[in-house]
Length: 308
Image (tube, rainbow, N blue to C red; front, side, top):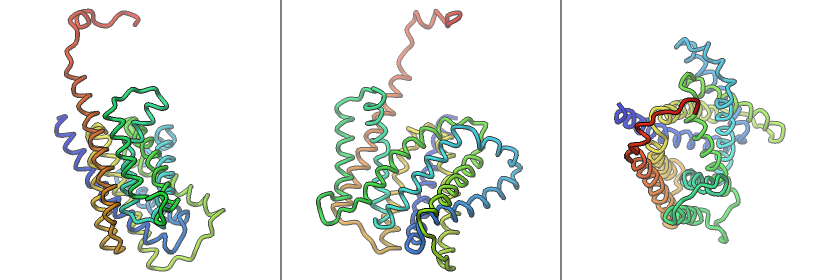
């Protein structure tokens, strides 16, 4: 059963990450005509309506009471922050570069665990962190004419993604995935409407509306698939397959926007992916070793202590 769950989770993550790249492409097309806050608000409204209809059709409307649970709300807030930072970044960057920078999430998580929580990692893991962030510098090219401060936004989004994934894996199984996705859409919509006070909105033509509809549908499907992936299998198992998004983003960037990454950027992407995959492999190996370690005979015979 465990192997089947892992396989299902991996397939869900590959599909969800690939569909998220499609959503990114729709967002980039739309942000050329309307501001980020308007995209978040209108996309959130459309996604919420679709999800509400699905919840009603599946008879899960009573489960909406779980929307107010702390972890469900925190996940929605972090996801809204990720969306705002990422959409703003792709207004000036290619979706391939922005998506690749997002993949430093596991490296940023590991570094934060050391700096903030006193965790201990070996020198090889620190080298992996350094290589990953070297890959980021190859993409953003600081100190050159190609550098734009907007390139720092995906880094902020990566940190929020790490927090979002941590929260997602700890949402109780009693909360339906549709409810988590619906809450995310509603909170993102709220962020968008709040942003309208500082960012003037524009009239929406039929083409832009089509981009928003496509983005809403792909957002809902991508959210459902990735949330299901993280709730089906351990995050350390499914997370490496999030790199499918980079491959799809490069393809979409080239085909839709005629924006092919240069060799330096491709090298940066390769470094980020290699460092991330090594980090995840090391984490999984360490967990497997711990699980396989025999329990001391004395501890096995003692059993739990009364009152302890």
